[in-house]
View 1 (cartoon, rainbow over the protein chains, first blue to last red):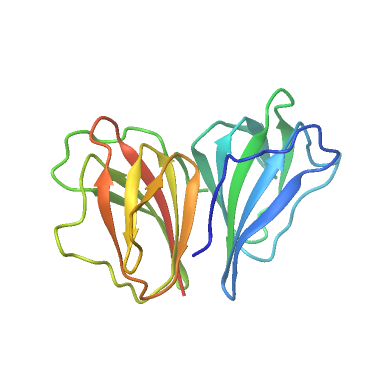
View 2: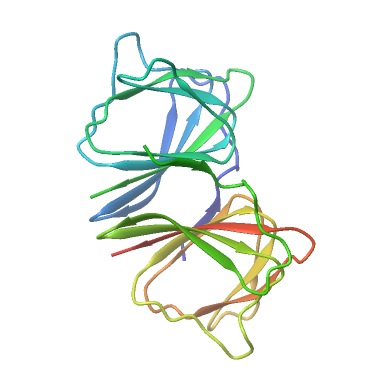
Length: 107
Length: 107
């Protein structure tokens, strides 16, 4: 039985986001992502072949969708369903605490 | 874009657990489950045809697996992967606060 805790030992002062795969199955992948102030590079947009259901467990982030005037502020417990190929970027994550995401990619 | 907050408006004093489907796709279902002190009936075991990845977002619970001597205490952030047909039951959930689960069933 695979077990763990999503809040355990979030890394600090990382140069990059830390992505930990929690489940990998043919049609679904679950990841924990820890951000410490990172954002998407200027002009970069995610354009993913699979839909993603993502929630913020801790911290704060601003998620921008192409075509929307402003970024959405996400706080603990907020979730968003991102259909395949809906372009989006992380405009900001809080650099005063670890921002922990739970991402479910599926097909 | 489907959005919401997992901690929003947890019901209190329910006679039963409240299950809210957050995502339904051919190979994956995501649910929020809110317990207010409920447990599985005596002698009842879940025996599910699909594997389940489940985490506790808030509250506390004891999850018992068949063949294990004691129940596992789950607190906020704890997750467990339950393979298909691994029999298990909820022995206890905290009745002083809402216990909020995030369950991902997949095939």
